[in-house]
Image (tube, rainbow, N blue to C red; front, side, top):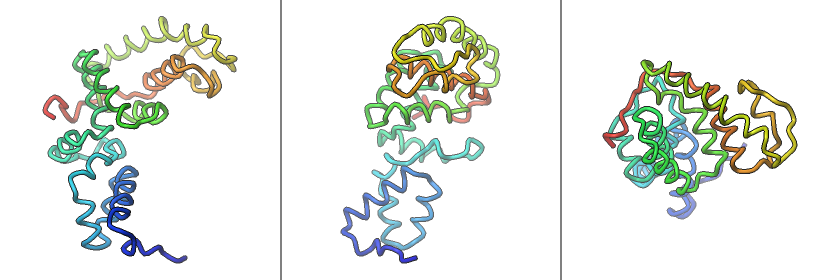
Length: 203
């Protein structure tokens, strides 16, 4: 297999490649950094922190606090979303939390990507708040999920009142409101309460 000589590209194109790799995963970014000094210099630019996929890092790994702060300062969408979810659920600051989530969406995240972030964010709620989380999940199932099935935006494929198969209940053409009900349902289904590893109020 022939490899494309990236160093023969103009520097601005090389920088775009680095940014795309950064948005894919930290592992790929650090692998690229090791390729040569020129690429390392491009990867170490502060602006690249805007594209880092913070949520691709396993929750058991301890990311350097300054790196997270730098990513947040560069309006990194994943850190904006992390801060929003933590403010909303952990600190009970709903308005501020939603504002940060909207900022993340405003940075170019499509609704399907936000859904992926919701389902991958398993660390936000402190373990001591597990009962509160379960109470909110039960409240969501009893008060919000029924409106998902009563909405006639698309035909209902199957009903699932306890979130086990909510992603298969409607087709992809559902309205925006139903889409977000589904995504929040997936969040409540897959979220695992555990200790908070970062206090985003320090960013």
